[in-house]
Image 1 (cartoon, rainbow, N blue to C red):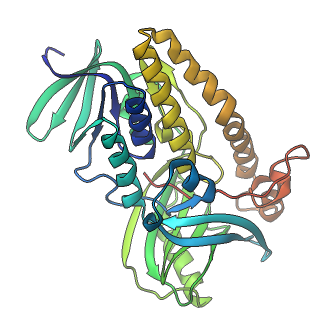
Image 2 (cartoon, helix red, strand yellow; image 1 turned 90 degrees about the vertical axis):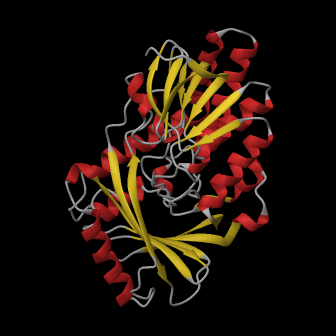
Length: 369
């Protein structure tokens, strides 16, 4: 790359989702010079998320009340054999676009520079090639943080690429009655994933996720799921909006190489069973930002090793556990044993956690990227 650096910073963060903005916020608060770039011209748009967050996250990052659209009290899980399991699941449905914008605004107020409509295309010797409209230039950074989603460009630079995905599609549809709970449906025709109904006032996010290894069309599965919900009297058959995307479900695929860190979906840090990704994105992004800032301030890249250690201590065990459960569950799709397998492989059941860690599930949201 023979391009002169137009901008310089301590930390360049690629991707302004929850992971990237959380990294930018923490790094800027620690005193680092931060540039956060986002390929989209408007952060958080289009919304690609079922929009549920657990209550703990609202207190951890100090969300404004106006971002919390709908309170959720419990989750109702529907098994293929007709059994229904209810579990406490305290949280909120949010406006995901405004949530992402809120995190980015907090980062900007703390000193991070945000550049939208910018795509990272190449990397060499601490220089990242940026395409912004018809303009090309380079940003020089001491540390780079990749938070650019399941098909991460930064991950490709360091040989850490997600290989296993669920393909998700979602409609926004009118509800026939108000709900203060989420619904999850396991069905034989939703291979490798589940269907969901997440209420948002008089509407709902209605979606499905199917394992791409089965080679199925998520649109067909979603339309069949919509028919089921309509016949049960839950929704009106009117599509107000639609979205879709990929969710990495293979577990953590890589965290760091030299002066490059990955966080969020780019690192495979979402839950491979539930697809839940927002909480881990905020946590891991904040850790990446904090540790990167410390490495810059102390002028010691060896400090970046602390990121591996922190992730291993805080989230790796739960993600690896979910990977094992997913592997087991894959053997039961399309079989009469699926309902029983779910009682040890789905977070609503104590069997998921094992004898030494019995607690109910609380965090559900397929995060579409």
